[in-house]
Structure formats: structure tokens, C-alpha cells
Length: 512
Ligand code: G3P
Image (cartoon, rainbow, N blue to C red):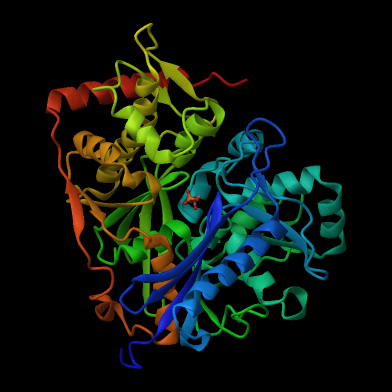
């Protein structure tokens, strides 16, 4: 190996249920990794919190675990030229900017406690003008409702707010701040992809919007809160450096929300390319080019990535429950302890046997945005078996993806030619075949599916000169792909979709 090729990039992937650290070589091949799960805190039904300090500890542990393996394989730390971060988006952390102490558990993006706040916001005069500015509908999904909830309900947060020391951030901001050593260095930034998930940012200007801040400041003056500076996703200086542990002194040079990272990792740089990541939730991002498209059909406008000289936007379809539906079968219903067993169970039956499972544990996101529905199964008979339930759980994600693609076609005026996929559930050939059967475009699954981590590594590697530009990525992750094409008849596919849509309509209005 020439010294030129003996170059690596580290990538922190801080997801909803686990943290990972991967080290990639210049061809985008992961050479070492370490993963840790952390506690999911559910104080009440529908609530979900993470301990912000535990998250930081898992990042340190994962870095140590992966670097140990890297060194055992004969590499040295100084060959790691840059560190990238991809993170769960919208999840909200508040802390005291002076002490660096978190003031409450992070409220996770799946948490539904703020649906009442979202409903009240929607009733306020002028609420229908917001989406054109921030790109997303008012719901419990963006960070804003979580921040308002914390201000209203947690005395300690209110106290620090009144003192003028309250800091707000998403997980990227919290990690960068903490990895740099906290208040001493006070590196307090967010990248444009993460900022576009807060509902505070003007999506066109990529700046905090006065209009949005005024609208949300009806009870608390949000300008009194420290908000991180919005910077590019790839930047040699803005994110500082890791202050302790085996990678002490190594610069963080790239940050992307995880779904943006997956688009970058799939090299979805051309307008018209799209990827669907079947993780805890499932998120379809469609690159629309240099200008945002504000959806009229239930999708979100988001910054796809913001590299020097290349800012791209995406239309996004967000599905709240994907892998978490599989986990529900495993953990709550005791179906199995391994996710691939759920696919095996689904394969024991030839079809769903008439069962439709609307997995609306956090209400339904795109393109429906129904926050008063809950998970519901339709079509249970004495013939229903566990295999049908497993199959219906996988199918729920495929149906929502179909609805999102239909909405995208209407918003963009174009039909997609293919859909690139990744994430845990994409390992299920049954699930991917079902997806192809329902959407009737090729579903393209790369062999190396660590695309979220790879995307953050690419963002970091660009700023550190590991790759010069998009052209230099040609050799990256070009291993084989598997393509799934439709096998089902049009009529059968259409019948399944009709039953799903009927089930969705019947779910609405269930929750008090
Ligand atoms: O918007 C939430 C999203 O970023 C979470 O991603 O991979 O944890 O499902 P994931």
C-alpha cells in the first residue's frame, strides 16, 4: 500500500438506538468498527428519552473499541485524517452554556408528548405560512415543540432560560460541544442539514428565520436562548477537535444528519437520485438540486448536504416506524431475539393473509401526518398466525414508501427510475421484494450498506482533502449491487395498496 493510500477517515454514527464508530479506507471500505446500544427511557406511553451523557460516553467507548481493533491490525492513529459525525435528527438537548451540564434527558424524535403543543401551534394565526419558510409542516416531529415543552414543564430549564444561559441543540451540536471539551472551548455549531430539522431555519437562506422565531416566541422569548451557529456540513475549522481519548487532537471536519449522510454515502449527488434508509424509522430522500421544493403533498423540504460550492436540497418522506416495528415484535411480543428471524417468520406464510398492520406508534408521518392515530391491526381472523403479523409489520414500511413515492412524483413532476436502499431492514430480501412489488421501480441494494457512516466520512474527508471532489469518489463503494424488480401483478399490487389506504383512514381520530 502506498503512503498516499494509507489514509483513513473515522465516522461516528449516533443513531436512535445505538452508537457506532467506523474507520473507512480511501475506497470507502470499513476496516474497523465498534457499536454500543444505550438506554431507551420511556417514562410514559408514547414518551422516549435518551440520557445525553450516556450518549457521549457511548461515543467515547465506540471510538476506543474501533481504534483498538484498528491498531491490532497494524495501523496507527495518525493515519486517521478526519472525523465525521452522522446523527439521529430532531432529538433535542438543552444545557447550561456556562457549566455544560445537560438539564434534562434528550427528548427523542419518536416522542409524541408534544402532539398537543403541535395542535395548538397549528391553530395560531399565521401557522399556515410557516411551511413555506422552514419546509416542514408543524407536527411533533421537528425540534421546536420539544424545546417549547421543556421550557413549559421543567423548572430547571425555565430557571436557566431566565438567567440567559440556556443552550439548545440537536445531537450533532451536543456531541461536537462535548467532544471538544464543553464550556471551555465552547464549540457551539450545527450543520445545515440538522438545522433544517428544527423548524427555526429559513430553508432558502440557511439562516435562523426572524419570522419563525417570532411565531414560536408567544410564551418564551426564543432569542434569549443560545442557538448554535449554522455552518456547512463539511468544514475544516468549524467543528473543532476531539479533546480526549485515543483520537485526542483529531479534527472533526464533517457533520450530517443521518439521513443526509446516507444520501451522500449512496453518492446521490445528481438531482433526481433517491435513497431510502430502513433504520429505526425509514426515510426517503430525493435530491431536487440547488433550490428547495416546498411540498404540496405531505413531504418535507430539507437541506440534503451543504459542501463548499455544493449545496443541495431534498424532498423527504419520513416514516416513524420501520426497524422499531421489528423490535416491537421481538421485545414486546416475544417473537424472537434476532431481527433476521422476523423475516424467516414472515417467509413461513405465502402472503399477509388479509392482515394489515398500521404501525402508527408515533402517529403517522409522511405523507399522512395523522397524529391522533395509534398502531392498529386490521383483518385478524382465526387463521391469523405470527407469520402474518411479521409479514404485515415489514409491509407497513413498504406501503408508506409507496405513498411517499406517489407524493414525490406529484411534487416533482418526475417518476423515479430506481430507488437505492440501505439500513437494517434492507437486509431482508422479502421486504425489498415486497417494496419492488408495490412501487414498480427497481430497488437497488449495495453490497456495502454502511452508507450513513460512509456519508459522514465523505463529508469529513472532503474538508480534510482525503477526496478532492465528487469525481474522486468514483472508486468509493462500487462493489456489487442486488436489484429487486416487480414480480407481482399490477392488480394484486393495487389491491394491497387499496386495503392499506383504507386501514390508514380508519385509524385516524382514535387517540383522545
Ligand atoms: O429523523 C430521525 C432520523 O434521523 C433517525 O434515523 O436511522 O435512527 O432511524 P434512524
